[in-house]
Picture: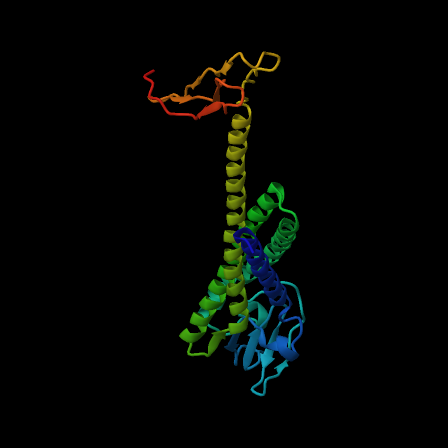
Length: 301
């Protein structure tokens, strides 16, 4: 397998992995039973927040109380882009950390915009996947350019989403710990989103390398084509023969040397093949044939 094909398949492999993780990340929290119940963004002790459960987990589409036996109970109604805001979720409470009361908009918009950036990243990720797949089947400059551009755009939005989510919930952990309450980030969700960012970084680099390799091969091909064309254009001058003349008449055929100027101090004097035929004294005597090859002669311009 050539280096170019190896880069293509590595690019496609990492891109498929990023797409799979992104879909799973978006579907996480769609159900609060089975494996998906363990994919959450944030868990904290919320006892005393009005009617809030003792421990609450925030998912993509709702929040649920979490029991020690590993069950999600008393879940809220599901909605797209469920915001993280204890003040909006449970109402104001004197036991709630002051950061959620005074900076409500910070948490609310960080979590919602992070979700929006994740959906935009998924959109461009699908376009990138289609472009890269087409490039593997049949490589063209247009598909390679689209794949490279969308790869970097996808990486931008996915990184932005990961940073927004991380900033929002890391700030929340600090607020809960300041009130001596237990809080932690969801390791699986954050592991998925940052792994996706890493895969997209590799994908963007590979897409750029594909374009560079293709342009370099085109440049080498163009130079090779021009060199071949120049060589073929230098045709040889036909050499007259001694057909139709008596065999006793010696014929000497010499092609005039051609001087090729290359713009340098030393110029190459290329003498084409020169054949000198001398008739022997006797009819059966072997004729002498001498062939002179090209030589380099310094010529001062």
